[in-house]
Length: 454
Image 1: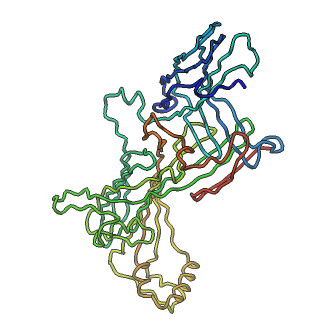
Image 2 (image 1 turned 180 degrees about the vertical axis):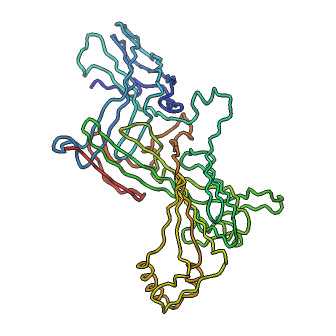
């Protein structure tokens, strides 16, 4: 065989190629290393060629193409070659080192590893021996290299002005004014993520019912050449950790609430629990809330810029407040009446989207009739039901904004960065030919759409 073992032909250490900013930015990165050739006897070599190759592979288990005859589609995205030796030369016994340097454009697709699509980068070296034209007499070796993309672009580094990366959303409700601020709309899996909430009530009996923050990951796999694609999505809940008051209170009276704090400080944590109770707002609610982001073990991917394997992320913040009528009186429900009295206020729901539109809904007479039927089935708890559900109007704020998720391997040591598969966190689900196992995802899949033109 023409293949050499690592002790005869080897590469020097590879540092990851770290791209900066968006692929559209006019920039480049230098990638350098060397090839080491160890000879046990004199050899005549005609050429040594090093190639940096980027390969994309998309996997469709249901089949694509004519008669769905193929399950994978592979193509070369980038190829650069350097000739380290271009004339016939005789080399003596011992070790010979050949350095090389690639100028990598910022438009290069970063490394992607997923069960239905991946982009990998490899460095290949080919050593051709003199007067030995057979491919079996070529010495070859290849080694993968990791390509990552960071947030700090060259333009940001060279710009001396202060960059404001926060986003603020103001909503004016009947019960209160709500301000939500996103500190920085980016994170790396496993990092802490903070949101600032300020709620200024306009009247008495205002209650903060619930706050929820989620990140939705939308994935699209496409083969434009065969006009086939698949779309899937997952939603990850940002877990509440703690909150710090932003009001100007003395240090002795300011407080920090944690999900693991004592029982007297659990009211704030209950706001972020779907089964928890609300919090009555006696004054301005102003807190910096810290959330835990999903980790790589949760199978969240980094945001990509590649059309054939596109991963996008969206941050959704849902906040619900409620208030009583101006009289502040509870409404009594007559369980013997077939319908609710027209003088009794009905519960309404208003949803305020990020565009500022308000969508309101109120139960119809048919819905009220069914509501009374359900009330009769709850004769054991009519008082609590009236207290919690009637006489209150609910307003919901929904804020959505794109968010960028970075590769979690950016936080590791560049000299010893493993792949997702090497860490054991993600098992490879397919090879370049066909899948080795199907497996089941630990994250609930929200959508799965496959379409192919015939």
